[in-house]
Length: 382
Ligand code: SAH
Ligand code: SF4
Image (cartoon, rainbow, N blue to C red; front, side, top):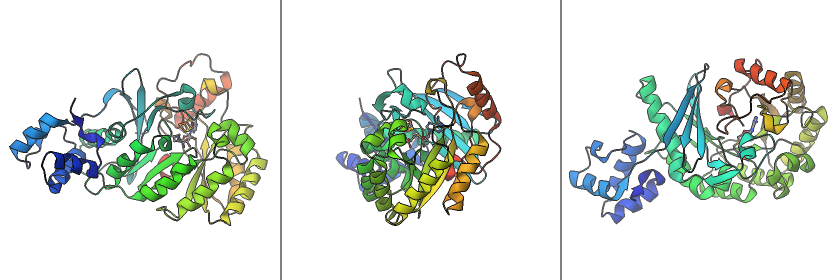
């Protein structure tokens, strides 16, 4: 089997080309062909000498993922399922908006963290994606969309690592993929427009700060350790205080002047005024360590096996008001692509068992078809 060039960032590709006796600038040319022009065939690369193209064809290939299916939502959101072998399927979601296009990318097949409210978590962990499999989602989507929409210019302006999997539990494969996204010879995305979302892998937050400080979103979901450990089992290993300390440290390297905290609103579980007041107190304590935050309240997307329900909107707004009154910037995320199960936490492939859903959950799923009325931001504005 030859080498898949999608597995390399520019540094890796340069080393590979050097092994073939090629100068550095050849690697840059090749990298631009792959990522900026979407080339998958060396014969297309007409400014490379024929002898080099033949050498490359003998030593390497450019192979993206196999598409299982594509689902187009009425709101313009597109979801792809990709086959990553051995029965594993991952998902990628494109969310268009005026002036920007966001791609939500998966980092693992399944997830080992096992959050109670997440269908990927319920599915369990299958395996880490390779760098090539992570970047292929962007490579494929960007070049597909240019053709599909008949446009020459860049379509995807933002990437969020909010698909399946915990990106910071697949750090070694994630890092080169992030570098390709940021590289001016690759996708040239700014650090502010690439967001890693994590359930709180503390040591890796520090490494990301050193290696590649992109925007950070932290999935908090609870204001105290007892509740958070119940919802996000990783909290037992890295409790809230340690997590928030890591966030404060991250901030000095971060491209934005705040960390985004995601908070999935679960009816009767974490959505009471008392929880909001605890959050305010928690954030005040950590503000003293230099942490500044923004909250993004996410309406829970219900799925049968969770046994959980989405908080009603008045509850969400009352919660938001307590945070806002305390001076914490707070938004409520608008759900997108619900009619194709592309919303957060629904990225587990086929959402099974629609028949067994209890009536209220069924109603909530129905209600999602139109999206919620109160908006405020989309997934890409994290
Ligand atoms: N593992 C990472 C990134 C992927 S999950 C993380 O947990 O941050 C991306 C976001 O979707 C997280 O904030 C997660 O809490 C949220 N999410 C998961 N399941 C959800 C659901 N059923 N409804 C709404 N949001 C959900
Ligand atoms: Fe994994 Fe994130 Fe889902 Fe938790 S919310 S199970 S960390 S993908």
